[in-house]
Image 1 (cartoon, rainbow, N blue to C red):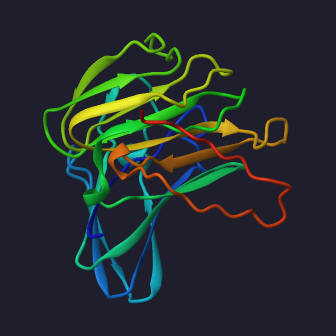
Image 2 (cartoon, rainbow, N blue to C red):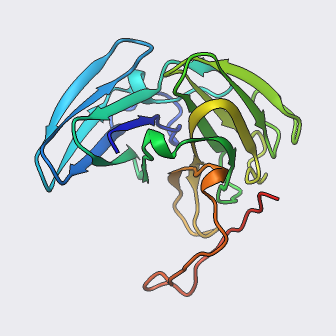
Image 3 (cartoon, helix red, strand yellow):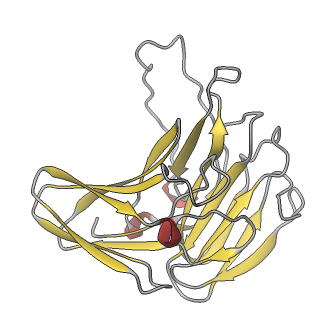
Amino acid sequence: GTEFWATFLKNHTNHTGSTNMTLTLIVSSRENAIVTIQNPQTGWQQSISVSANQVAEYVIPHNQGYTDAAGNIQKRGLKITSTAPISLYASNYDDASYDASIVLPTTALGLDYILQIYENELAAKELAIVATTNNTTITITPHARTTDGHIKNIPYSITLNAGETYQVMSEDEGSDFSGSRVEANYPIAVFSGHQCINVPTGNQWCDHVVEQQMPTHMWGKRFALTKTNGMNGDRVMLVAKE
């Protein structure tokens, strides 16, 4: 695509001053491209050049793209535009904790999401929402009690402007956040994951996990699976829309 929205979930570090935490956008393109990264809420903007069939990386300042608070509206949404179609990933590194997510183009975003998050007893499950349009009303129905006091299966609403973000975190470390629903009147980007989790449970040490969620209008009825090399088996999670 040529337009994207992204943010970075909270990693296991308890503060934004970690000297080792690195937030990176990873870009590749079949053509030469100029990629512009901006935060519409703060006015911050940078551009990078990407050569055809090469990979370029750009480190994002914490105060522009890191959603370090839960239950608060923050100005941490990034809009990424390009002069040619690109593939985009967002990576989140901290000491002994790393994961990356593909970033979906704006054309793939939707109004309705039902989350899938790996269940684990360590730390908090989390989701982050990025608004792409001003006056976006978002209804969140968490599948577990949140750190800011919202009750399981009781919906509540917030309003975001373009580039604003809102992060939700589960209060109970042993709870399952999968099945939480996020609905909006304008397209939004939704990322979900875990601060630091053992996969599988009991397998030390923990790592941050993150993935951008697919809106329900992109869900399907037939899927192809393959076994991960070197693994005894793979976990498959199923979530029904109806």
